[in-house]
Length: 359
Image 1: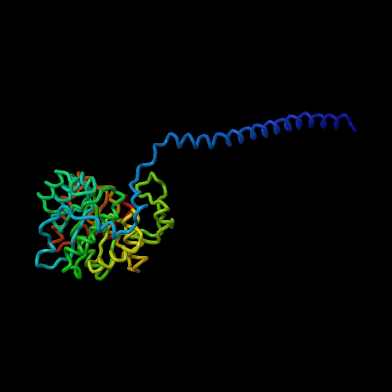
Image 2: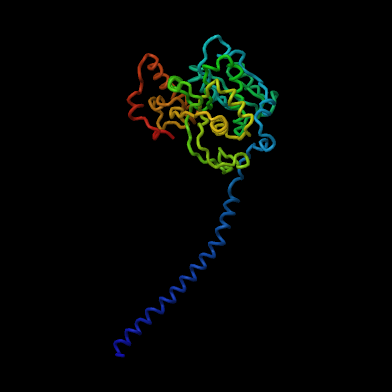
């Protein structure tokens, strides 16, 4: 072996030995890092859980004791209702709007009364802070007597009882408007929804004979997180997905189907999500009724408060009282043009308007 070859081998030894030592060090550091991670990950998870506030208290315990809707309705009475309604008049009734509200949401009700509620027969449905007529507040009593547009039931009013409230709305309409059910449509909506009466009537005209009309949600996953507003525990409903239901922010029910839906619901265990319960579980699954989609009955609202943005919708969700009062003058002005035979915002609605502008 030549001296030149010997020098090359010595150089290789000098180079390779540190590399082997470096690789060993890196492996050791990696092992330490993995060990730290194995310890730190569950520790961080526990610390995170400790720092989170406790889940909100959800009033669902009564559903553990009783899930029969008829039993609940039999125990609830009407504390206050209007002495006269549109259904008690001797005239054809095609549309009645019932609005879910709560005892303390006076400003929301006032916004509705000052805007679209003047153009369609509108009534507010609320419960009480307790469980009896004695729990009705003086403010709610005076308000109900002053406006004659409130239906107050003796059940505890909170979000988890919205299914009971919706059932009471259907039952009230079926009994108080019994002579008009063949031609009547019930529009169930919320007190933070801006209704466009002119477009809503067009929706009715374009869906003759349809049983339920609303904004269809397809293949939706249910919320199992107790922190979520729409939390649905598995002990109430086991499937994780719903094939189709109508958004509860606003949907139409044909009057002739109200008693049929209620009767079927008496055999279906109740859950806390009223739209999933009534439009999917009862109407679609139990009765086989068709849910008709109309994007104008929207669970969203426009990014920009432009009149033509609202004109493209029959209902717009999640408005504050000030937003509703601010948007209404433009909608009403367009409605007056429509009544004169014009087509306001036609180019905008046909060519520019898109659900991309909603949130």
